[in-house]
Image (cartoon, helix red, strand yellow):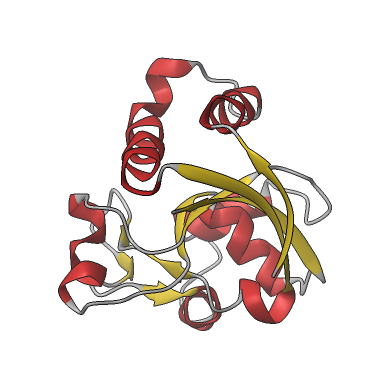
Length: 159
């Protein structure tokens, strides 16, 4: 991981809102998790991760509206989730969402140095996981892992 620069939480929030155009109310969950990360860690970095690092990012549980669980309660890495998605139909909501993205698009990804104290991260906290954890940008991370994007830029909450 290469540290590019320190950034303020205001810049992180602005980057999130600028790249999510449905409006603030549609993103209350993510804004809440970003706020939790800011309170827990207190500092943010803009970082560059290469593919091998990106594939090891831990993702929290992820369940579809139809009840299908793509990422279990205990979490899963980007690489493990890519493997799981190979076993589900192309009509799966995750596959459909990623089909609408370009692997060349540049959007910010939001990460934390360890899981945040939120119900969706309980499985990671319960197994005492300590490592880079996804906060927002799950489908982009998976798509970039599938297409083997050589590097990404992300915002990382740190102490």
